Amino acid sequence: MILAVRSIVVATVIWCACAGAATAQDDVIGRARAAAADGRRADGIALLESHLQSAPRDADARLVYGLILSWDGQYDRARAALRDVLAQAPDYLDARVALMNVEFWSGRTSEAREQVKAVLSKDAGNAQARLVQQRLDARTRPWTAGVSMTTDSFDDAMESWVETSISIGRETPVGSLTIRGSQAGRFGLEDRQVDIEFYPTFRAGTYAFVGIGIGADEVLFPKNRISFDLYQSLGRGFEASGGYRQLNFSETTKIYLATLTKYHGNWMLTGKAFVVPDEVVGASWSYHAVARRYFGSSGTSFIGASYSHGFSREEPRGEGDLIRVDADTLAAPRDRHQFEPPGARQPRSVMADHGQRRVHDSLLDGTWPESGGGRKRACGVLLGARPASLLAAGRRRRCGARS
Image (tube, rainbow, N blue to C red; front, side, top):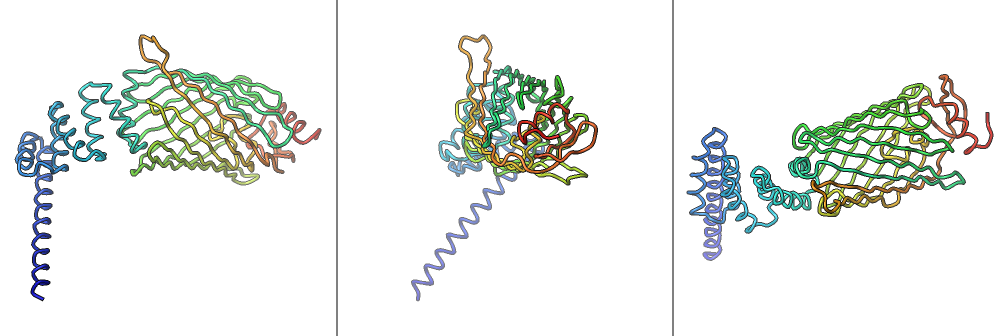
């Protein structure tokens, strides 16, 4: 009995001592942060230095110490403090992000990029790391060029659809700008489109997508299209967005969408939903699931696969993308590789992108809107008004001769 009571007393004393130490630590860190926020960084630094003399292994206090030193522009001392934290706790992500900022702010581009890679390998959706990566790219590899090819094959006798594109992009401190030219072949018809896309960044974790497209012949692509998305990081690797698409054929097709993305290590998992309001046939929904595995030193090369119900494409841009509102599409592993040409005076990136899709149950009974505004019964659902030449080609090739 006496031994049990003694054990309880000793445990209570130890618990009180630990609780007291934690309270003292929190008080020191809180006071130091308050001093720094009040513009008295020197006082905050002195307070933490005194505390660390008696508790040199207090990683949290040393992290705040490194942070305040970096805010004060004392990058060498901040770097040393943060490296000490990481030597003690290699997986301390906040310390890794703080060291990344120090390297970026002090102009050490190579070191900053290494820290960006280290952060994104643990937290691929880290908003601050992605912002620093964007700004590093704007400094060191501002120009990109790309080629892309996508093939849609079908489980019936219909010939494959092929779309190719070339693009050139420029990274800027406020976001990336891309100009893309595309050519599509479907139903024995061809068309071309030029897109201008901009991804402005407002702050770490908040950015947008703005796109404008202009079609050449209005056969497969619309006369023009407008796109807008707003993205917001939710923390813990999650990111959400909402957006709008407007495709202007002889009539206008409006599309609303929402996405939820989860980053985990080098993986990105995305769920996306589209809805197309229609007063005649009712709202049409489309769903997409995408998985990507990123690799390579730049963190932009990837291999991935997707499943779609409805639109066969993650981004409806033209005629054929709106036809199969009840189709199931399996995309074979899609790959994008980025490399830098040797001997370039200024770093440039070249990307190659290829995708292969297989469409099942590609058309169901529905209505085809006509260019004149009326609707005819046909073997598929096509949203928005379309040129008569495409309607005729689609009916001949998919349904047999039908008026």
